[in-house]
Amino acid sequence: MNKRQRIAEENAVLLNLWQQSQAGDSLSFCQLADRLYRTLFNYATSYTSDREFIKDSIQELLIHIWEKRETINIQFVSIYFLKAMRNQLLQEFRRNNTARPLLDLDEIDELSDYQTIETEIEKNEVYSKNQVMVRTAINDLPRRQKEAVFLKYFEGMDNEQIADFMQVNRQSVANLLFKAISALKSAIPVSHILLLSAIITV
Image 1 (cartoon, rainbow, N blue to C red):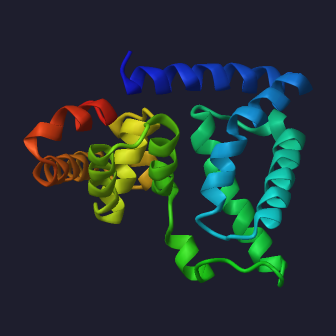
Image 2: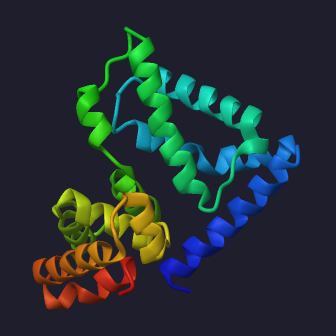
């Protein structure tokens, strides 16, 4: 089973838990929160090093989503929760003078979910010297290319969905992905191409 299939299967599991949560099953929502907690926490550390602040923000987010569950339409569960986490952090930073973001709020507004690429690789890959090379190559991509790669190969979105998420047209998505994959293949020695293929399926 390749990475895209695993991501699709994971989303199916999360979506099933979400649908049960929407119907009022609090146990399913707890299971969903448990599966997503580490990803949300790691993502939040890109914004602040205050661990207690992060924990409180996640708790507030989960309470808000549970209370509003009947009105929320979700197709890709992890993408929705990550975007909601970003918005929650921004709100908390603006009303909590004691929280210290790692970046200015204007800079945070420009960030997107591509940052969880490192989280996903660290969670799913046991690092070796060669794997670090692949990780570095992905991390060196321009921001928009990295974002497109994350959405395509780590969240399993198709080009049309990526275009909608990034608010660009489908051709722009295709161009970003083509440039990203070309850059990765140029940056990684031929002997490591199989490792690249294990991380992304072209």
